[in-house]
Length: 61
Image (cartoon, rainbow, N blue to C red; front, side, top):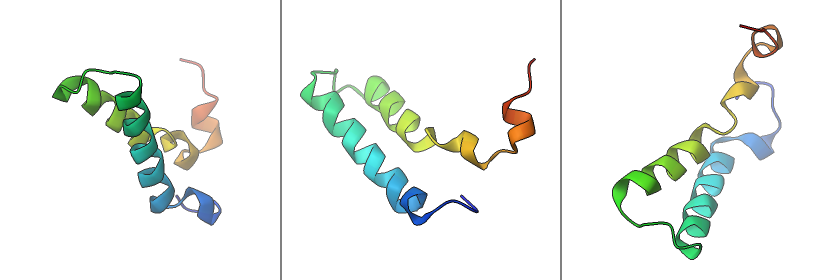
């Protein structure tokens, strides 16, 4: 993510993913593939808006 500090690099995304999956397991989320995939994808994409131009993020549709 260009222009952001090092705390939001690829390592950050993988740390968030690992933590999210760990918490999901601890909370008893079904270990079947679908729920865990949703958690993993959400964690991997959680900062995606930070790479978009502010004008697009604030745009009303």
